[in-house]
Length: 529
Ligand code: FAD
Image 1 (cartoon, helix red, strand yellow):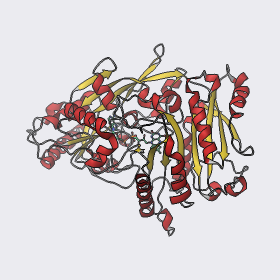
Image 2 (tube, rainbow, N blue to C red):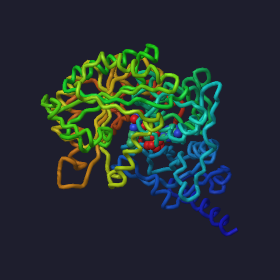
Image 3 (cartoon, rainbow, N blue to C red):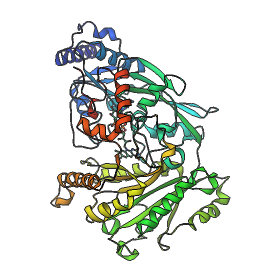
Image 4 (cartoon, rainbow, N blue to C red):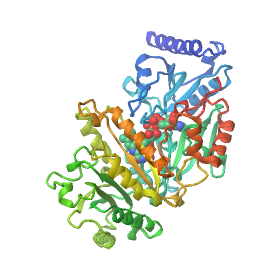
């Protein structure tokens, strides 16, 4: 009884504080009428948990945190925010792996979609994924982590087709951006592999959307940076899961040969599976000796690689092509032959082939292995001034010269990914933004700032360098687009979207979140209150 009374008190207190703090005109007796099945709390430890993010550079304390038990809880809260005369902001938080405070708000409520209150028995998110074997799709809660989606679908021998490199991200969080990895050239981004979503709009309406139903909202939320609604359920396409992968890395000292080969490999997108790789990525090696690159553990200590020994004289930079071929019992027999046929067409440094065979799950979950290592050294929870760019193919050589061989000056402070994608795999109707060319590259500078005497590793230095890179591209007229964009002014957002898409984005905002209360941490629109 004491426990029940205490929790009722907490809820009432949370609501009252919310009302007082945002000056709601709702009567306090109205809010319990919301009938939330989950928990609305102002417990400082819960507030603390959702106030920061992976970037570690921005903090904002919300007035309260909602741990929803159902999609209706999400709808009830958003409707209360929408209908109150003064309003308050509502930000969905997936796993808080944004860089620049995108899931934060200081004048409203954060909805903890991924059930972060687990440690205190508050893991209230709805039931786990539901696999439809015959139809080959899975229905998942918007706050579900991709690692859990994978675990569930594997029980049926199935798996999603398109991934991110790291799986401890929420479905709603990656679908609000795009969700890309080395499968994107073949299957498109994650937003291209969703059949249907349930969305709570900024008016508090819970709507099911697909190509056939509420089509405008469907396309709006995919890549929509959380601006049009909160995804509470997604129906994700599945394929038979392979058991194993052959994972190969080869090195290049010549950038144009490297990009030529990457572009060749992604041009095979329409070919039968036996004639292409299943995954194509790559990364840049600037630091001497491959140290400092938490994704490079694959190069085992028994295989020490020194840039100097492999002709990295060309500006001291090497490029690593990373390719994967999926297989299982039925295809293992032809694997060597198929891989060899493809490798023969590539121009990598012959002495630089690194191969390993690992279970499919281990490959997909590879970054988590690196995470655990970094955590054990206290190097995971540090500021991350990341910069993710989509660079058009026609300008990638200039980018290489100006940035990898120029501005970076042999120090990267983290991995730099580089891989191309085909625009024809991206649905133009979604809210995601890509450059105006058929092939474009992701360049991801995944940097960690350290508190050291080496000034080239500090947050200030790396942030300045990011600005320098953007300035260089701007002055050179390289029409790139930021992925996981971060801007602070309206004119920057307008430039980012371009005139047509910006007009559409605004129109959709007016329709689905007219009071501009959702995902204010993206800093695209100011709320109306
Ligand atoms: P959050 O940071 O919690 O939220 C991001 C935005 O989405 C916020 O604006 C939030 O309000 C909104 N949002 C969250 N949930 C919902 C929802 N249910 N409905 C509507 N809006 C919502 N990205 C890739 O594409 N490929 C990668 O390989 C990749 N690797 C990564 C590796 C690491 C280590 C990290 C930290 C990030 C990586 N990312 C990658 C970026 C990642 O996809 C985005 O940062 C993503 O937003 C993180 O998901 P999250 O659940 O943590 O979202």
